[in-house]
Length: 614
Image (cartoon, rainbow, N blue to C red; front, side, top):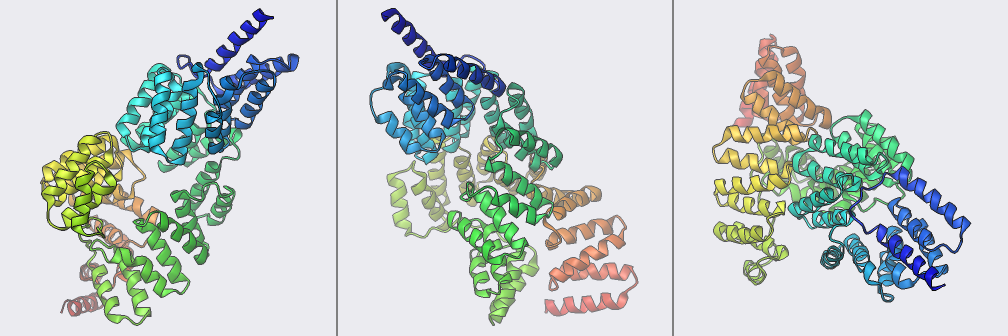
């Protein structure tokens, strides 16, 4: 009897540690499903089997089946397994079902055998990360890595933690080590793809998604992320193929319905988009992207009140999300609430870099409220078609209090960033740069730290330092926020060619970037490459419609330069109707009418332009 118990104990420890061994390749889903069937058959033959039930729990965990894992662990406990050995696995099962508090309670409920300490810490780290408690997550993961230093799956979760902590370089190192430990680990390869998508662009990530799916064709997370990337690249047929495959694996995953809703909205099928969004059953309601799409869809379908509710929720979470402010303003205006429209637009129109669309809507709302002078000011600013310089975000507290708080905690971003803004606003750019450098030095793997230094340097006129900082940020994140800053800093530093190259690099790495297409179009206009300019501007126009006056004007200029006044005239006419007070548009429109022989209309436009200029 003692020999039997010893042998069973050995099998149990082996089963427990099977999921802690990071050396072997991660098996594809089908292999795990086959193994689950074999284990279930073995348990039917021997209902008192413990090791088989523990392995079954491990397999269920790998298949994402928290309920099945819980049942297998409880079955092993009922068959005589020790709580101290299985407590971490039971906690993992609870965590997978969204019961994080119960998982932590399970871990803390009693002793844990030494072989499972690392697993327990790992589960705790995952729960703390899900709860947003990054400090507790860091401590738990540190303990887990100490106990399980060569577990590839653990290192993938460490990479996720570091990414959530904005430590891009640390996340990259962690996932690279996971791949080094297990080159066929599909989860590691898929997360690497996510990082590459941020660091190097959409196209660069596709090879990594392919590698992840080659390792496990049924990796649902990889399929969904690949689908999102393909959609951003405009490869909608391929996107649908990936989504359909994922739907066979996780048919109720709300991300599937959200991505299909994005696709439907892009095709202007807003009723289908609304139906798909509703099928998420509220599971994504707190996600900013979901709120934004819901607001857009409801506004397009005439549900102004619902659209305003979604936009309000998004603004509460992201006060500086100006797209949400514009949607809220449009919804309020369409619902007859001019006061609400003005209130929504105020954070935008109070800035010197306000866009013309917001200024025009603010003018209409102010006019509706009888505030003629305010409306005229907004119209005049909109007619300029040139946006001012963006200002640093406002610091609401006393300058002395802000600087004292930052001096006391020079590495706390929550205290340092407002102080940097206050320094810049007070003209003390050298102090702002000093603070930003200290924060950057402590967080070299964080793109935001380099961006902050670049912004401070740019405000202080130290363009070379700004270029260096933005280059470092772009090495970690090749998106719009870094590349456009770099292009601006290069231009101000006198490197026009470098600025253009940065914009074109963004265009190549992020084909869905409207800003990249817009700027690339302006570059092409400067070089008199009319066909390229038309291609870039038409891509923007296809995405945003005929509401951007500058795009319409530039398209008209490009077609006119090619000698095709027939195509130029409707475009400049549309631009004129949107901005009837812009003298430059009137002059160009008049010149086209002259060339078409309509001299009377051309003369009328020139007279109007002259009157406005007085």
